[in-house]
Image (cartoon, rainbow, N blue to C red; front, side, top):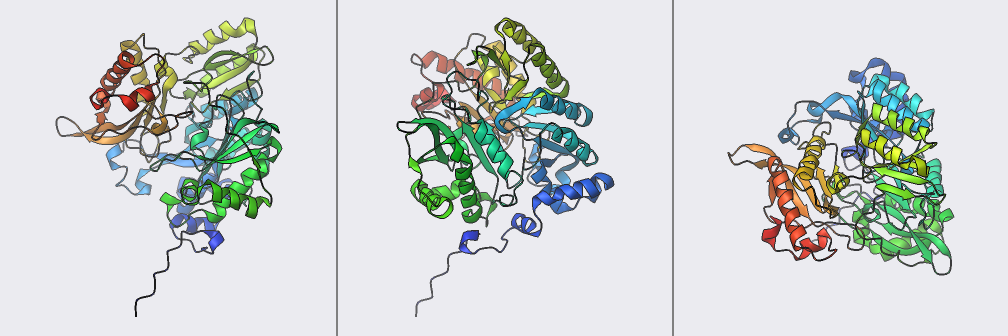
Length: 553
């Protein structure tokens, strides 16, 4: 008699009855909701200190309130994967502040600046998720930090963890003259209704959202779990096209359109339906398959939309058109641009998003001096000052540049992005921020007339926090063997990735690894070949697709 067919192992999907925790992360979330750790921080850990923190809280639930232990200084990248978590942990934290939609008032900007200076050794980084990250935070100081931030309407709640993370929004929402519609009401509604809601505080993994009504499609909607992209329906007018299932890291995937048009007032309901599908049907058995993109890959857009409509919305969505292609090349907002009200916004590029408490404070003073109360952060690690009168534009540009925030940057300053890297991150293998800063300076010196859009993204590990697969030149940190046989910092190279009309992931050439010391030579070489061989306005990614392999090495 033939053996009975083996029952397929469950993926940990709650909707199919698999409620037994299948890995340590699912177990600690079942033991206690991550949001509950706030009371232990206030009542126990901040009073007794770092050593009193329960290990499950330390490396788990504290993330629900934006806190990660940072890397202990002096540990080389080659030891990242071999040391135990407690050996990598420093007694200080990275603190991530949610800035949903990238929108900050001056009171909020000053609160972040104050926290950075008083508690974070002046550290502050603008991330490509429109957050602000600070370092050197002591657990004893967290209650005071929360009090300062929450007094101005900011929070660290669900800034990390298996939760709905910060919502990306167009940095020029509500002010751009070419905007299809302002997505801010939807961002605000989702945040007020659902951030901190325990119905969504135990997801299989993190969940990333983007909402933009800009025709520039300026929030990297192709690589988020859910995105709402501005579009005009021929019958119903301005609304949003829904994209689901994008993501990067070690298994990158471009999101898919559901083919549905959603008016702005229905965005929160549709968003909650998609998050609920992820919560109920997401793969909880293995962490490396727990992102929504894996479920979307298995189901496809048609089934996903059907489940959304039948099981969660109880109604059909309106079919809708795809958004028009965005303008070529730059999707950011660097430079001087007129607003719909006749004022101007000025977009400036820090060095890979790195600023500081004093710099943020001076930006707030600058904005106030020209009559503005609004600063915006961007998904490209840049920042904008809004509402600048015409007569104050040039003084504002000059004042920003005096802070090393370039409103008319070189292509290398404008297009270089870097993750946190070895300096603070326990997952990193190589240093990134400082290296990226030196790299852009060297490329500016060597290629002073190079003027073609070129993005160079550096990541300290395979997780792609700096979106390396969608960069013109993406650099994934790794340990390589130097000419003398010794191990040294290096990068695997991805070439020709991009978002927009030709969204796709960079080309990896077999064996193409570059040591950190060789990076300036390598990028100079490739940039020169591109400049010599390009046809008219050909983009770097298009050139890479047709270039001879020898020209890419």
